[in-house]
Amino acid sequence: MLAAVSAQPSARVVNANSAPIFFSFFTWGFGTGAQNLGRPLFALAATGNVFLVGVLIAANALPRLVSGPLTGYLTDKLGRKPLVMLGPAIRGVSNVGQFFATDYATFFALEMVGQFGVAMWNTSANVLLSDVTTSQNRGKVLAVRHMSMRMGFVAGPLVGGVMAVTWGLQSVFLLNGLSKIIILLVAFFLVRETRPTGAAPAPQAAGKPARRGPRLSLAPFRDPSFLALSVATAALSMTQAGTMQAVLPVHAKEALGVSSASLGVLISLAAGLAFALALPNGMLSDRLGRKISMVPGLALLGVGVLLLAYGQSYGLLVLVVVLHGSGEAMTLGTTQTYAMDLAPSTARGRFMGLWSLSQSAGAVVGPLLASALYYWVSPALAFQTVAVVLLVSAAVMLVMGRETAGPWARDEAPASP
Image (cartoon, rainbow, N blue to C red; front, side, top):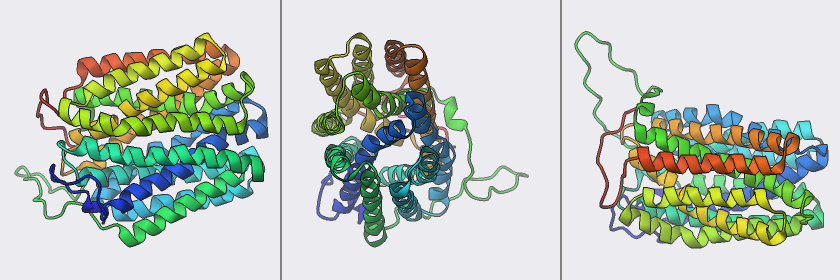
């Protein structure tokens, strides 16, 4: 039923048969939103060290450096459904373990295990959506998917903040684990395989041995558009992990005295804005192109982060959250859509898995860089550095990225991985 989001441009984006996929993304966002609130606060409570909070967030992406590309390869070889199921299962088990964790080291180890599942879900779900959409309707479908997750991100921190105050911080991790178990059940009963079948093998040159199935390759990095996408994706991931997940919660709590419940409200505000703007942005990117969303969105995120360097008032924090939610709505879904546009139909899994390297790289570098600058130099320099990276990535995408949708689209064959 997940494949009911038709690949035909005229198909309805949302209908009764496609409900399971959007429900799954909502449930993922709900649990992950609560986890994003609880993770840095648990690390800070356990260690009292802001840099160790950044180390935890950065280390989360290390398993994804391996499991993202591997998952893409396996979706081409084994199919999409097995990985769509395995990812939530691994994450759910790790979350249940975190509910019982009482120290930083145990929590850290379980987080590493869980991130293998996160990468499996993210990559396989993106490949599945790439199978069942086209460049004409992909922006709208990804927008609805993004809205589903944003709804979860709105509700998750709100519920998680209340649970943390009422039953303790670790109850948040049990909530996330339960959400992943629900996704596993939905995938088991309602997902059907979408991997293309029956494609003819590529002709082999005389005297050369036949290739034995899919293989991994770095060929897409020869495409300037893929390079531009990788830079933009890494910058976006760096901002999400380094600023919103690692430094900002600690900055709000320590420098501004914001409570866990109030912080949950602020995070939900950002998610609510991203939800409200996702569908209009998706329709705009289908009609006028991907770059018209990505370039201004990256610049908006850069301005928002930069403002954090020049004030510590609660009102400024609210403004930053508003800018972040708006910029994320313009960039997060659109970078994923752009990656799907570039992916060759015969190797979507491997291509999307390779693209996930840039996500993971940004998520490793961002928290380490931002928390190190914040802890050892100054908060202002930490925010200024992330802002410069975002503004540079916007310029790179503007200059190097080719348009893949709308009236200025250029149809070029992508390099197969």
